[in-house]
Length: 129
Image 1 (tube, rainbow, N blue to C red):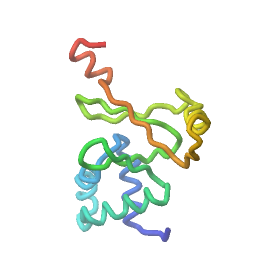
Image 2 (spheres, rainbow, N blue to C red):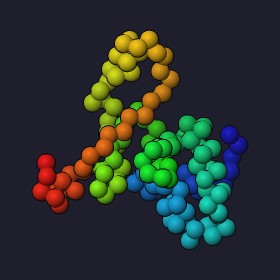
Image 3 (tube, one colour):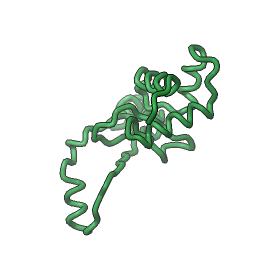
């Protein structure tokens, strides 16, 4: 991937906003510093960064994809109430890929695991556990 100043700015904005933002969220953050950036340019750069493995693209959370600068092996938890996305350490289930390959005969090249439920804050606000 060739160097691009805009791509570098996109990556920096993503690292500064570790809330697993959507492109629309990042666009709102970036447009004050870089008024020339368009939403289409932002999407293109995010997708290129994701395809290069520099960031993660998280699909299926909402209608818009979310992006994560953390490319280390981890899972995600999405709160069904507040829609916040949290990282979950992959050490919780360290053998999941090996066991799945052994049981199914599949060769797994990558995986995305997403848990859904209520975060602690939303549980406390509803009085749930």
